[in-house]
Length: 419
Length: 161
Image (cartoon, rainbow over all chains, first blue to last red; front, side, top):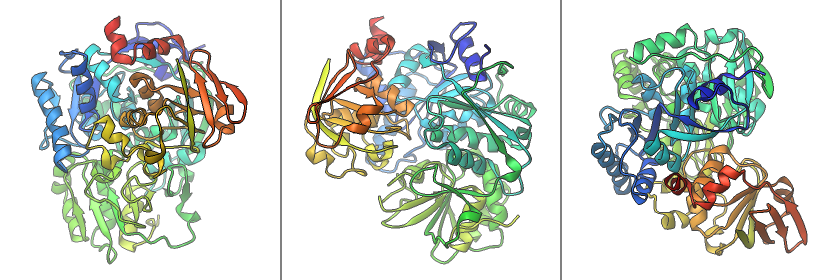
């Protein structure tokens, strides 16, 4: 009985030749990540336990991005706590506000995550790096503290669901439509405790930005991680961004999967998740009524990358947002921001009547930079549409791709560009 | 180790945003977090909860973000145990790591109703609905996790090794 790709990475990091689903192991970590919400809890725990040193100052990444630039005094205290800890421990990969970005867009861009790594992060969307063929998963602050102190973490080896990706997607169909379609099929606990392993000839049509979006939302199906095979596109990305050498693991031919699901990219349509769960999906063709909206957010660790901005700008170019529409665009990192500026995308957004923000997670979790009032509706390229997620508990979030978000901003109601 | 208390009952997919809304995550103080616990799903929870009370829910409890503030808020509210059919995996980890007792039991999660008096024996996994006179067998933790819980959290466990 063979191992899945995830199981092979975990076995290698636990010093074992073989692991099987359900087995408890302790694995060595290449990277431990935290942000301004989760790190202060971990830092306080370390202090309480008199754990005064970190296992490796180069293998910890601290990214104040949720409520940074500081949204209020309490958030400023949290960011200060992270900054002081980083200084004291000489953390190499601490990102101050001018160098920062949303963590899951920033770390791959900085070359800190490569194929074959085992990474934990005190943020649920840490599963994003599976796009590069790494095992990465979200944990809490205590696991982060233990990881920072010891460089190790305990895992229950997951089983896996295999997604066989076939076909070529039509124009305007992106990674977001793929993952929303999948979550709509299997539900928000459809991959609970499992790996989502993506494979198949259709993957070659998915850009790295598409793959980041897909792996990013594996957690929204309850998964431990989402992971892609390491092909030429992935290797090219790693080579361009990192000095580290990737290690390629492949699933055994006789690996055991709990389930196999085929996704035909050529059949996908623009897909939207209705309130209040990411599994409440409808294709654009299934929406018969006109759903008017007040705000559109384009950004986040899910969809704030350059391709996302290019897609949105392509639709918004020369157009104006609907009267009363609040369009908020957040490039996910400073580098993406600059690139968008150089490509003229920022100009397009502003001329269309949108506002462009510095990188922050702010609006996605109802922090700041786009909080919703009572009964307001938002089309958002973010990842969660739970009750009260972006503001008032009666507000509604519709999750969609950058293409649908941009078109909806112009129309004033949920709409997709025609193919 | 045992728990006994009155039940607060919820359904499927209770997410971490309703357990502790992100607008309060500018604090990491357990007592302050507890004053907003369950606010977006049950406004009266904070005023009604007593020390020892038990939360019972159905599938995928604690889905969503990795915020440890969610089990911290529940624990600081005085809740002695959360029983569910299934837990989201990060919440499950976090609960063990901070020493909030949790128990998976489908039958109990379906049968127990709000306001019932319930007791839980963590060593045996026996859950009793005293109000209804029913008994269920939950899944006790594997030995490895019991060690973490007995050490009162992961960091204590690491230090004790």
